[in-house]
Length: 77
Image 1: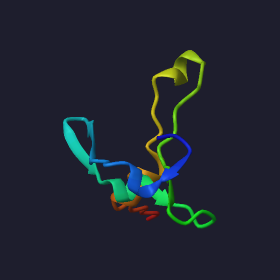
Image 2 (image 1 turned 135 degrees about the horizontal axis):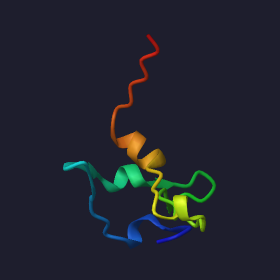
Image 3 (image 1 turned 30 degrees about the horizontal axis):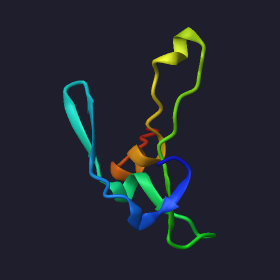
């Protein structure tokens, strides 16, 4: 599912990311979003990494789905 598709056309499950031996489970509600301009249509919030530079090629940006699923605390003191 890339781009937009009918929200009810997929039976999506949880995505589990394992980082440093800790599992982070992201339910579909956090990695899909219904489009305001097309009700009933959803978009997939993960994006592919198309970087060709060697130092960026195998890197991942967790982005919005990860931040939506887990609390992020910024402590400036």
